[in-house]
Structures are given as structure tokens and as C-alpha cells.
Length: 315
Image (cartoon, rainbow, N blue to C red; front, side):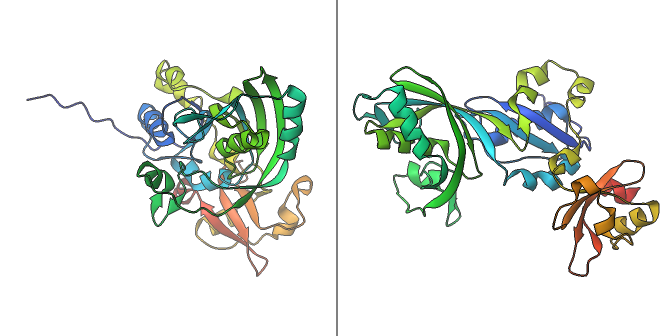
């Protein structure tokens, strides 16, 4: 009888890990690999990277998962490599490649076309994507040879910097809004140039203020002991650092951790240099500096608890 592997004892670990996802691995597989190494009881990622794509993938463990949604709507940055002269059934190198026409343009002409794609543009999501239709991902229909009509969506391309061009391939940095498909952008640029194009490499470089230089690979994690890995975790409140901050006294801490509104006036409590024209969602801190959740200013003008850390309630 085969000997069973010893069961890993999970632990209540909280924090954010900035992972450099490898090529050929799904975001969920990368998450589960990291979660296994940390022995974390709970984990989640902050938006899917295609298996082909590499780079910055923030992972959330424990209490940090409560705030992961704040990273879904943020701008992102990518380094993309395009090959001209052909199209792909999946819009990237993994699909069936069909030659179109040899590239017949110079760098100046390419940069002129790229400029046309900056700003608010229309995009049709690719069939090979995780978007859902009637409960199934579009890529499932695509693999079965079924084409689903997709609605045009507006996305924003903030910046495209052409880093290299050798006549057949181009490397560019793209800063864009959420929901932008770089594969579609590559195909649309190739169509505008009349020769076709597809994506050969994609690397996410920025998201929500995080940078690729801050990431760690799975191999680097494996080489560390548990304390070394734990030292790489960022605190949960880093996911909501863009929200205004309020420090409450012990009485309001007790009120809010028991589901009651704070006595403090949120308009007066927000630090002056962080005060926005409209205050709705706030980061909450106790007098000793502990982050204990988010507060919501409701229609009655009072500060109510919203997403609270379980450990704060226990305290």
C-alpha cells in the first residue's frame, strides 16, 4: 500500500505577496503553489494573468483577501512583444499562425499608428479569454469551435512607448486601464498596418503602484525557510493605501469592532493632507497604529464599520 504524504498543517497567515508569475502557469496554479509554501489557510489573487503572460501578480493571504477587490479596477502596465506579418487564432504565439503580408513600414510609421491607439479606444474582447457567457468562459466555446458575439468595450490606453523595432518585431511598454486586452491591441495595430500582428511575449510590470522590481519568483520562495518567506509579506492595508486614513480612540475602536458607528465626525477626523472632496470609504486605525478595517460614511453622515479584520473583533 502506497504511503500517504504527510498532511500540511495550515496556519492563519495574513499579508500580500508580490509574485513574479512564470510563463505557462495559470494564476490559480501560481497562487496554490505559493499558498502551499506559506501553509496559508486562505488565499486569493487580484486578477488573472493569462498562462502566456509573466510578471507582477499580487497574492493575498488571510485577512488581506477582504481587500483584494480594490486591485481589480486599477490601471496596469505591461511590456509587450509583437511580431508582424501574420495573425494568430488566439492573438498570441500559442494559436494557429497564418501569414498575411511582409511588414513594409519603418519605425516612424509604426509610431504614428501607435499614437492613434492612445486615449479612449474601442476593443472587442478576444474569444480566447476568461470572460463568461451563459456561465462558461469564452475560451471554452473557442476550443469547441463556437464563435460568440462579443460587445465592444471602451478602454483607455494612457501611454505606449516603443522600446525596440527591428522590422519584424516590436517591444513596447503599455500603460492602460482595467479590462484592456494587450493581445487585442497587438492584433488591431497589425490590422491597421495591413500586415497582421500577434503577441509573442507579455509581462506585467505595474499595478496599483506596485512594480515588477518588488516581486519574488516561486524558485526564490522555495529557496527560503519559512521565516524568510514570511518576511516578504506586505501588510494587508497596503491594498487600500490610496484611501483616506482615520485614527479612532479606544471608545470608537470598541464601538466599531462591535458593529456600531463611531462617535467621531469623519469630516474632522480625516487627516487634512488626505482629505478628499467627498469622503465615503476610509482606512481605520487604532491609537496604537493597528489597522483594523474599513469604515463607510453613510447617508446619516456617521462613520460605520464596513470590512473589519476578524482579529480586531477578537481583540
